[in-house]
Length: 180
Image: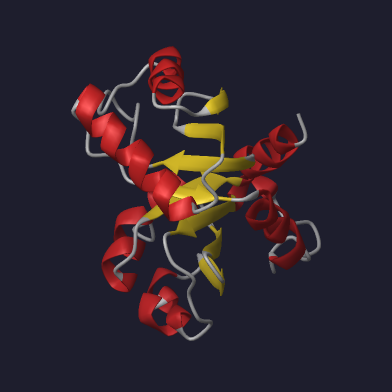
């Protein structure tokens, strides 16, 4: 049995793509996932399954959400190792007096190369900063996530990927939930 974490993009945001977590949990159990657990209302869901392929799990979830709720919701499925690497590889955590409230991670659907950072043209968003590490983009917002154009839509357009962003508090709590 493999535990996967599906990060659903764009549900329950500003009244759009509304899905109750109990309904999501029931839907996933009905298609065979076990030990389904959610964290907050923004689409973080753990599932246990015999299926080892993260992309297949994501496709199953996306397909079933569309069928049951009528929402086209991209899902990026990650592992416990992906979350652990956030703590190990974030260049911003190593900074003295870093404000964790300004740290975010964009999880993307494919593994990126370090040189993809050039495609993002982050310098035009200064003082915001970003660094690529595999299927993660570490972001440090200068003012806040709500006041920048360096967001999920921009990342998706520039890199031709599916992306979903989580704040550092959520990343920390999701890693802790893997241990439960």
